[in-house]
Image (tube, rainbow, N blue to C red; front, side, top):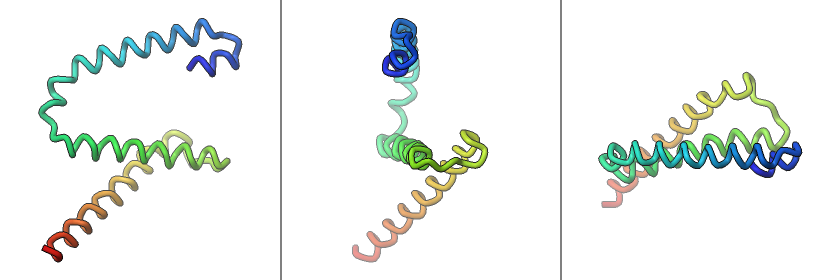
Length: 101
């Protein structure tokens, strides 16, 4: 955030925004800590991996100079595509594991 602020000549405002974001993330983290401890670790890893992959694909395409139809509104479509491929990969790996067992 501070990098963006320096580019706009407003480092103080960017630092304030970064500080507020840090506090908000800490508060949300403390509030959801209990419920998240009941979620299986592999499920969390899968969800985080899907989200990171989705945003990675989205930003990579934008960084390459292409434009998404609907701009940010196309993110749910990219997410659905990544989830579909991920579940297909998991199913394939499960079948392969059973075949070799």
